[in-house]
Image (cartoon, rainbow, N blue to C red; front, side):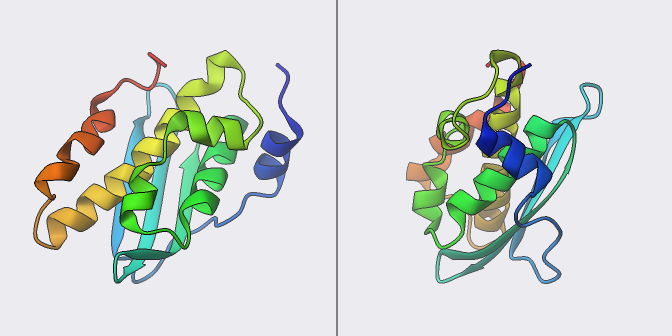
Length: 143
């Protein structure tokens, strides 16, 4: 399987690995049966993501997509982070093999699961944002 230099860099030198002790929100997605599980912690103030950390159990693509997704959302507003897509994560990594695209969906889902949790803990999900969490119902292997 051929991986881009960016995928290899984010796999060998992942950014933002770990946990945030006083996280504003956390989201965990994945399936132990397939072997990929991602957890993302967010530190949010004034609707801006100040920090993001991840822990991923999975293959190199899963680690690389987690790393890239956290890089893409730090410093962004919640609205900006909610626009993150699995295709954007894959493109930022200069592509993924088709059989590994499900990893980018897990990265998107873990970020959105954390934001959903944040909304639920802080007054509820705004009505106009509910559709953005539909991706949490998608099967990561159907991508």
